[in-house]
Image: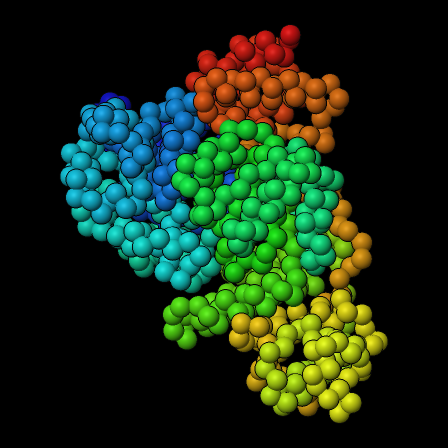
Length: 630
C-alpha cells in the first residue's frame, strides 16, 4: 500500500489506514458506526489481500465481510452465489445503498448481459454476482481475465461439502480459482458447518492455509421450541394466531402434497400463505418467492427447496411440520428467522411417524452402507436434539463444536421436562416386538404393538393367538399416547429400528441389554404447560443486535411510537411497490422502530439512525420526516 504522500507505509500505519477506510464505508454507505464482533478483523484481513474462511451465523453480518473489502480494494468483487432467483434482490439492495452492482445469469437477455460485461471490464461496477455453474463456462473465465478482480467471495460455502445437506456439484470447480488468479484473495463464507464440514470446505476449496474465522453460532434472539405432534395443523394455527399474527414466516414440510395442503389450510383460516416446491412451474415459484420478499405478513409454506440465500430480515418465525434430516439442515432453516436481531421463533412439531419415516428413507436411500450410516448419524443427532431434557441451545451449539451455558430462552429452559425410569415399559414393548417376530408376522407397525400392550382385540391383533401372547394387555398402566412416545424414544435411542414399506419395528443389537436388565432406559416426560417468551429473550436480542445503539422491539414501543411505526411501514410498502423492490430494501423494521422511537426532526438527526447511510438519507430522508410530522 502507498501512503497519500506516495511513499511506503509501515504495517501499523497500513492497518490503521485500512481500518479507517472500511469504517468510513460502513458509516457512509451502510449507515452503521461500528462493526459487529469479528467483522472488523475479517474485513481488515481481506482488504490486505489475505484469504479467509468465515463461519458466522445467519444474520451475523457475513455479507459485509466481502462487500466492504470489494468497495475498499481496487477492482470488482466477484461473488459466487448459489441461487440466481435471488441475485436481482441482492443487487437491488446494494443499488439502494448507492453501490454499483450487477449480476450475470441465465435469466438475462443478450443485451443486458453484454451491458453488465462491459461495465465489469471498464471497472464501472463494484460487485458482480455469478452462479457457480457460470465458472465452468470458458467465456466467463475469459471475461474475468479482461477485468480487474478485487476478490472472490464464495457464499454458502458449505455447498461444497459432498455429504452436506445443500451439496452443489458446481461448487467443486471453485477450487481452481486460486490457480487461475493466484493474486486475488478469496473469502469463503457459511453459516452452517460442523468441525468435519469446516475441514471439508477448507480442503475442497484449497483454503487450508487461509486464515479461519469462527464466530459463535449462537442466535440468542431465536427461541427454539420442539413440541410433540398432536393435530399439527391446529398447533400451527394456534402458534400463528396467538404469537405471530400478521408476521412473515416460513413453514417447512417434507412433501409437495403437504405443502399444498398446509398453504390451503392457512389461507382458509385467513392467514395469507403461498406454496413453494419443485413441482410448481418455474414462473409460479419465482412469483411466490417475489411476493414473499416484497410483501409484509406473508407465510411461505415450502419444502427445503426454498430458503437458501433469502435475505428477508423480518421473518419472525420458522415452523417445521416434519422432522429435518439433520441438525445442519435444521440450523440452516431456522436461521432464516430473525436476521434483523429481533425476537423470533423456531418451532418444530415432532412425532413417532417422523422417526419411522426418516428411518425408512435412510434404509431405502441410494448409496452404499457408508452413506446410509452417515445419514443415520445425522438423524441420530437430530433426534437427540428433539429428545433432550437439557437446554436446546446448549445441545445445538455443542453439535457445532461450541460451548454454551443454558440460555433461559428455549422450551426446555422455560418449562424444564422431567426424565423418568422407563426400563420396565421398554422391556414390555421390546418383548412384544420380539414375540411378534418369533411368530414370523413381519407386517406390523407401532400401532399394532401398542394395541397388544393395551389388550385391544382389533382385527389385526386377532390374527395372533393373543391368549398365548404373554404380553397381551400388560401395558394398561399407560395411555396410548404414552406408549407411542415410548416407541418414538426407543427409536431415537437406537433400541428399535424400522424396516420395510410397512415400518415394521425391529430389535437392534442394543435391545438385548435392556431385555436382560443390563441397561437402564430413561425417557423424557413432556411438560404440560406451554413455554412463555421470557424477558431474557428481548434483553439478549438487544445485546446482540446490529450495533450498540439498539432498536426497540414492537413490545417496547409506546402507543404513540407504535402508531408512528405503522405509518412508516405503510409509507415503506407504498414506496417499495412503486420501485418494484422488497420492502426491506428501503429500510429494515429495526430502522423504522428506531425512527419511531427517536422521532428525529432533521436530516442530521435522521442520519444518526442505524441503517441510514448517505444514499438512503438523500433518497428517503425528507419523505420519512414528512411521515413523522404529518
